[in-house]
Image (tube, rainbow, N blue to C red):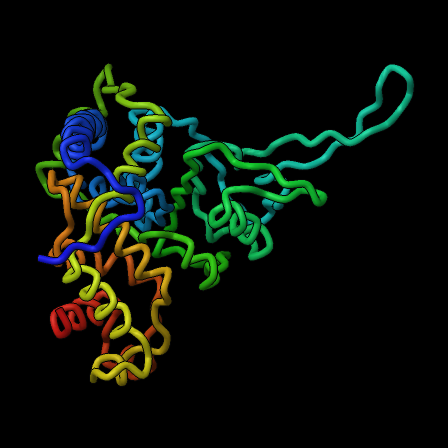
Length: 335
C-alpha cells in the first residue's frame, strides 16, 4: 500500500516507541475522564480526537448533559489552563479579548496598559456561544484561526496549545444569533451530545447525589499534549485514505456529479474540511492504537467534521431530511 510521506522524516523505531508511550497516556486520560463523566464514550472520543488533532470543537446538546463538566474535566486531566466565558446578548468583544486601561505613573504621566481577557487560556469554554451578538462572536475568529489577537494595532500571541470548546443548545433558539459560516468552519468538529443510556444515567444518579463526588486528576501537561499533536502530524497516511477524503468532501459540494449533491445540498465544505478530516483520521487512529488511519476512520468522522459545513436545499427540508441523513447517504454512496 502506498503511503503519503510526511514532512518530518522519522526513525520508525523511534516513532513506534513514541506512539506506544502516547497510547499508554491516552488510556490514562480516558480512564481519568471516565471517573467523572459516565457513558458518552462517543462524545469523549470525538472531543479528545479534536484536541489531539489540535483543533476546536462545537458541543451541541440540551442542558444537563454535562457539557460544562466535560470541558472542566478535560482541562484538569490534560493539565491545561482552563477558562470559561458565559456568552450573553450584552457580552462585548473586550470581555473576551481584554482592553486597554489608562494609568498614571508617579510623575503624572498617563499611559495605556493592556489587561488580557479570558481568551488567554489554553482551553477556553465558550458557553452558549450563539447567545452573543455577531460582533462579539467574531472576536474569536482571529484567535481560533491565527492563535493571536490584535488590540490597538499590537499583536498578542495566545498560549499554546490553544483550544476552544464551545457549547450550544439546539432547542431554545429565542434570543440567539446563529453562528456565521466563517466561524463554524473554524471548528474542527461539531459533536452532538445525546441523552445517556439507562445504565450510564443510573451511574450518574448514584455517583452525584451522595455526600462525595469523584474528581479528576492531572494525567499529562500542556507540553506533553503538544508533543502528541506533533506526533499525529508525523503519522503516515495511505493514499487510499487521502483519496477517500477528497472524494467525500468534493462529493458533498453543490454541482458534484452525484444525485444527492444535485438534489439536496445548497452549499458544502471547502478545503478546510479536507484538512480537518485528515488530522482527525490520524488522531482517531492513534486513539484506537493504530499507527496509520484507514477509510473506516474517514467514514466514522464524516458526520462530525462535515455537518456544520453544509446546508441543505429546500427540497431536502421538504422531504424531511437533515444534514446527518444526507452525509450518511453520501458516505455510503461514494466510499
